[in-house]
Length: 266
Image 1 (cartoon, helix red, strand yellow):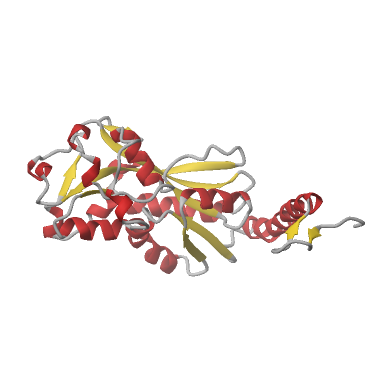
Image 2 (cartoon, one colour):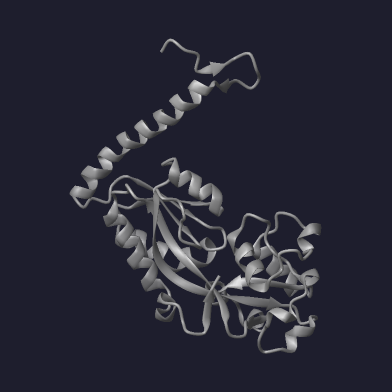
């Protein structure tokens, strides 16, 4: 090309300014080429070919068991590969064409992306019997003391949405003593008699009778999140996305298909 694409005088080797632009253009070209078989498959209404679907870690364990097995049995041609990814890496993977679609907890703001609402689900408190608010039937934001909370790391939209709703932007959380925790880990901590955490509505259905005792709904307005299937605007495999959308909506209660009057989307 008559110019240097990589600077090999440094370690690790890195692209030059021109190299970065060439690499970015090459990504676009490769993505456009990859759409050709997708266009053919869509024209024939074929489900063949790998379909990469990213799902948030706070959604996947509670949503996938409700529909995924039945989906793959009903549509044996489907080859869906599921990846658990947080929101920001998911958006970047979509923009780069590394995945076909994603299930996240908000509508995308990027102009190249589009979203279809799947359902809305409430947040619930999961409270240790040793906590003073355990005796309350409802949780109010004024009841929540950050020092007793187990919350996910920054970067999880589940955490960010709750922090905004509860107005706890500056609160110090127990997470300072326990990094990289998962929602399931925090639930076990609560069950052992230690603090409060929050869980999504679909997680409640998976709990046993003793665990159900620890669940507390919020007072009105109840915080809820919008679950969205996101694709690029130049996405062409609409047959698969429609199958996904319909399968997911059928798998959740009908009252979750729309925002309820007593809910507030955060």
